[in-house]
Image 1 (cartoon, rainbow, N blue to C red):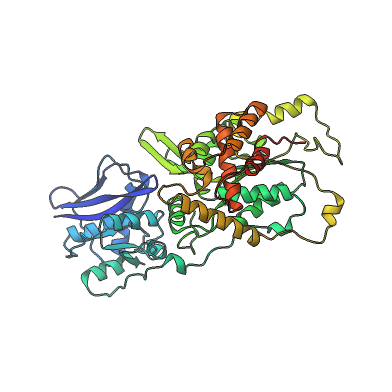
Image 2 (cartoon, helix red, strand yellow):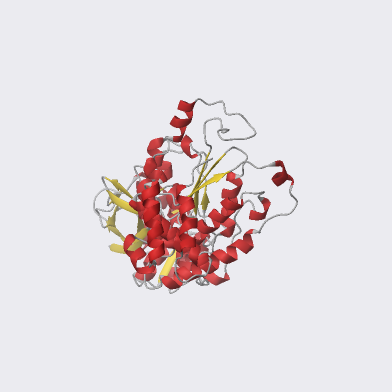
Length: 507
């Protein structure tokens, strides 16, 4: 007899249905074969399924069993097919007689029949809803994550025996209650508050603009100036995630196995800070079996690269395309996957190998050639993709001992939220979410300039030899500054402030 159970596979960030077809033939010698491009983990399901069924008291057929995972040209990875294979065997051996064409079944089995956690549950649930399935049978530990998706009944299964009994009608199971995005608590992020940071008022202003418009920012200064503290306080002024953004982030963390066990969905913007020894694949993503890298895990959040020149040059150069496009495409012989990578880059660097070049309190011991080579480790093409360049001067004794503090993060965040709200209203008919995402065509439509502004831009291009990319980034920066000022149009003052962030050199 042939039985069919629907399961799913993850391709990139999305899930696609996989038909688990089980055929039991009573002729020939007993055997158990799995076909349909299974990897090692899928092939080993034979022993897990056999042991699980025997340990719950079910009969394991001593016949020729063939399991086909269709479509056959799609590589199947991981242990998520254990549970649907087990249910398929029970159906094909007529130990179970029920109709499950409206259900998707996913889960890894232990030898005792218990159902273990499986990565990628949110994409599976979204696929099930999109394909009009009515029920989703998944591990108990993943039910909360999948219940974020409305319009489908999510059943958390602790053992294969529970599902077996439920499908036979001897046990009653209730679907997990739907969790609304608004009812979930927002996680707190940020190691520091802006008021904890002494001085660096211009850097704080630059970070506020970066948060308001989604702009990349570079901080350069001597050690101890507060660059790392500024970066780690940056998430506290970012606007809250929308539901769509939270779903995008959670899908990435779910398929990569990075979603915290206690979290149904990620509601705070990610902050990723990879060490400078991170490989190119670790940062960008990839591998023989492509997985998201740090830039995708930082999607809709912050990627903090401390000691930027210490990263391998090939690793940094790989950032250029994601910074420009907001996605990263990874091509392999088996196919191509695309991961989102729309993040705010915060880069921090010392001015020289010893860090004291330009210091008024400490002497630099580096030779001029060393300083030049150190600064050239970061290419001009990459620096050109960073919107805001700031120098963080060393703090004076008066600044360090000053008792009064500046604005706290919540005060700044309120202004940032208002600016983002204006952008969302402006881009309501587009897929844009922030000023930094505008293309040259969008700039023409949403950023009209007066004659005085155009004259200033022309002088800046000639005086500072700005590239076309810098020219457009100046306009986008000015638009964000105008949003923070609640101004309908860009003025010369907004452009002048934007200009200083594009051409400012370390002192």
